[in-house]
Every structure is written in C-alpha cells, then in structure tokens.
Image 1 (cartoon, rainbow, N blue to C red):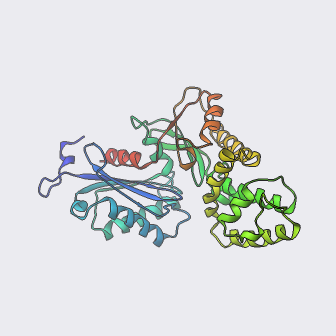
Image 2: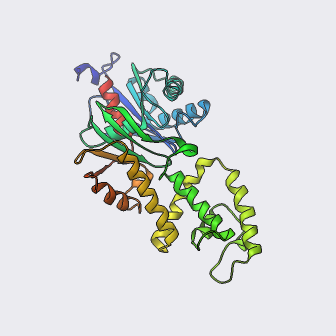
Image 3: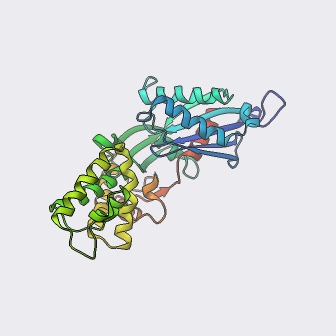
Length: 336
C-alpha cells in the first residue's frame, strides 16, 4: 500500500476508511485506519436495502450510522468509503440499486462534511464474503437474514446468484419466509386445516390479538373464539409492511427449542432445505469455501445445525461471519 495512504495532505494526519453493511434490518458503519488495524468507531441505524427503502429514508439511515461511527474531528480524514448494500449489484454501472445507493451515500457523506476520494458500492453479499478471515477473493457466500441469497464470488465480485428475489417472489428459507409460515400455521390451526401449534398463541400475542380469543391450555378453543382470532390476526398482519413478518422468526425458534413443537420444527427443517437448495443451484465443488452471514445463522441458532449437516453432504463447511462491515472496510482499503 502506498505509504502516503496513512497520512492526509493537511497536517500529515492519519487517514481513515469507512465500511458500511446495509441490509434489510439495519445499517452498520465502521471506521478504521486506512493502512490496516482494528476498527476505531461504529454506528448503527435503520434498514439499508437499496431497492426497498425510499431514497430519502436511506440517506437518513446512512447519515445516522456514519455520524455515530466517525467523530467530527476525523471526518476530513476519510479517504475511502465502501458499502455493501442489500438490493445493489455491480453487474452494470446503471443498475438501479447501485445507482440509488451511490446517490444516497454521496448525499449522506456530503451532509457530514466527508468528501472521500473513493466511494464504492458493492452488494451486501460481496461485503460479507470479504469479511471472512484473510479476505478471500473466490468462493461461495450465503446470506440468511430478513432475506436469503447465495452467490458465487470471483475476484471479489459476484458472478452468479441464486435466490434473493425479495419477499414477494422468493427469499425461501429467510427470516421473512419463516415468519410468514408462522402466521400461516396459526391461521390453519384456527380454521381447522392444520394441527395444534404453540405458534398460534405466540404469534397472536406478538401481533396484539386480544388475550380472550387466544388458544389456551386451560380450555377448549371454541369455534367462535377461533373466528374472532382470525378476524383480529389478519388485519394486524396486513397493517404492517410485509417484510416485518421476519420479526416473528424467533418465535418459531423458541417454539421448536423450548416446547419441541413439531410444526415449528418442520418450518425450520424446511427452511434449512430451501437454503441448501439455494446453495446447490450454484453447483458448488466439494471443499470449496462458503462464507455465511445473517441473523438466522448465528451461534446457537436452531437453523445453523440442520443447514450445516445438509451442506456437509455437499462437501461444504460453513465459515460464518457476523456481518459485512469488516469486509466493506477491506474493500475500501483495496480501492485506495
């Protein structure tokens, strides 16, 4: 790396880079010295999906995360910024998500008095892959959080994807998918199409359905109460942005782990199967590196075990990273 990169022209002060991980649930910014070393600042704000978050709101979330991560005294020393954005791609310069993310990030940086020489937009999956130890350049990546997508990474760029088509058309096995299934099985239990599950009560409580119409272990769930449950549950779901169903995913994990609920266990097993098929679509080679991230694949997650077992049959071992912020820092450093 050029020796001048650790100094700015004014005052020979140390230079910095910023890495951003902007996903469907949160935006995280990390400040780090340009030559290398551990992060020195961090900020977190709201969702950063470049396709689903309105432009003005995306700008606000980026500005908030950046303001927390970079002290005012250091803002003039930021020489490069790289962002990994859900909903963005480097497939073409005019790709809509990439253009929107770049515009929002440029405004946010300018608002805070930061004018780095390099501002690069990557997909969130490229940033996640680069976060693995050694900052690898080639292999497979899997993101399983609010959404779900797998990608083949070649020379640090995404060259093929599977899944990631959003809540309406895809994201099978994602947090949204699991949350939606939780509501579905609750409704099936209520109208008599499905078996008993703890999820009917826990989903109802989470969506503020009145206590007196929830199923209970003490008494029978009468037809009248079940009809009332449905009439409260449906508008409670419809009044919220669809992607918020992802917030119900932990209820499925709790029902499976704490209550050994067969319906919840089946949802998780099916989700693991969907994620495995998403990876399989990229024709993985045995022993190939696969980097995984996302809220569904954290330590102790009930989905991690079933998915790990399935991928082992493909000759793959998960290399998990917390998020893409460290990778975005590495990509910012590479840009300079």
